[in-house]
Each structure stands twice: as structure tokens, then as C-alpha cells.
Length: 156
Image 1 (cartoon, rainbow, N blue to C red):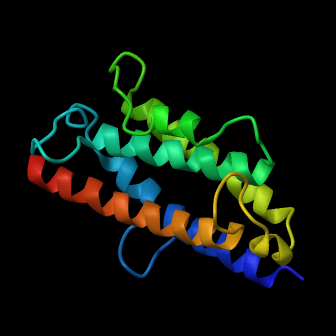
Image 2 (image 1 turned 120 degrees about the vertical axis):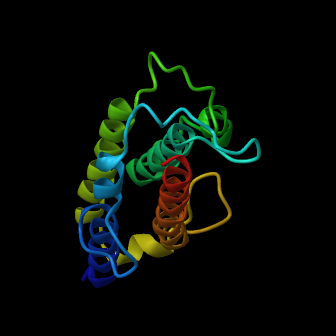
Image 3 (image 1 turned 180 degrees about the vertical axis):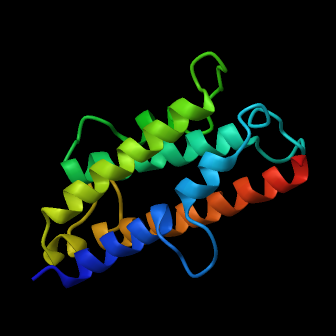
């Protein structure tokens, strides 16, 4: 039985494209942002929206790789891309949205093939299990989505 996995999948889908309790979905928010504003950092201590989006992508790819059983990429691999240097010719808002959607689509596909017992399995090269990783991933997306919304409000 995969009741817990299905609940996680449903929760992720709700966050990404549904009607979450706390507000609008991630994809709705990301799609409405003016791409000309995404490189602006309104506060020297914070991040531009594009940096937040690519940070979210890094950890989506991490979750995807762990669900795929990829042991080639250690934490150093992801830390190189975490808070990466943004090149506006490569790291566009549209490209970022597509990459974020692609990673999450793959995560959801992988979850559909799994049973609940995977939630207790250790995550390769980490000290926690898959259930903890997935719960953290859901929270991570909401946290950084809120930051993107806040930066957007500061810039308008």
C-alpha cells in the first residue's frame, strides 16, 4: 500500500499547481512575475528572485537524484550549484520555471512508482530518511516561494 506516498504526491501537486490553503500555487506565482525584475536584489542581505528560483531548482534536482538512486552526485555537486552565480544569458526566468517544472514532474513520476516503505529508507550520503527529505522538500518550496512573493512586492 502506498497511502503515505500518495499523500506526499498530492501535497506536492497542491503546492505546485493546486489551491493550497496558504495562498496561490508555486507555478501560478512564478508565471505572473515580470522577468525584467527577477535579477534585482532589493536588499544587500537578501536574494534576487532568480537566485531563489535557481536555489529551489538545485534542491529539486537533489531530491530527484536521490529518488532515482543516483549515487554519482555527492553533496559537493549540489553545493556548487546552490546559490550559484547567475548568468542572465543562461539563467533566464523562463528557463528556470521550465527546469523547476521538469524536476518536479520527474519527482512526482518517481513517487508514483514507489511504495510507502521507501519513506523509511536512508537517503544516500545523508543522515536522514526519504520521508524526512520529502517533508523538508515540501517545506523548502513553500519557504522560498514566500520569499519570492515578498521580493516581488518590494519591487512593485
